[in-house]
Structures are given as C-alpha cells and as structure tokens.
Length: 82
View 1 (cartoon, rainbow, N blue to C red):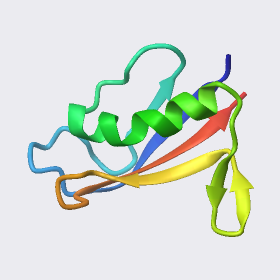
View 2 (tube, rainbow, N blue to C red):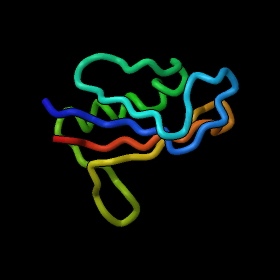
View 3 (cartoon, one colour):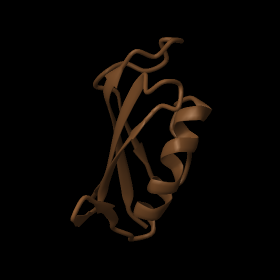
View 4 (cartoon, helix red, strand yellow):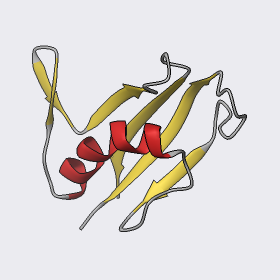
C-alpha cells in the first residue's frame, strides 16, 4: 500500500483548523482534518492508496484537488508519494 500526501493549498477555514501549507501523510489512518473535508477527499485518497489513477481533464493522474463542501473555504491537493 502506498501513501498519499495532502497539502492545504488555500484556507479560509471558519474554525481555524487548517492553514495554507499544512501537510498530512495518509497511510492507513485518517489525518486530523474536519469530517466534512475528509468526506470529500476520502474517495480519492482510498483510490490512490489502492493504486488507481484518476481522471484529470484529458489525462490520468495520481493526484487530485478537492474543495471543502463548506463553500470551498479550504482547498486540498492530494498526491501519491513513495
């Protein structure tokens, strides 16, 4: 099983939990982010942890970007890492 690095690329988190530049490495346990953002990111993280590549425009990629469902206040970039 691989690892996925999650990087906060933008943050206007209403609760102040996440700041731009925060990085989390996911192997087999949830990172310390809010449930709403984790629910949005988890399907992509699960796919990447299990060797998938994802649609990225006209290409396939081993990364993704996702917005917080609370008005897109937090942007998260995920990518596989060795």
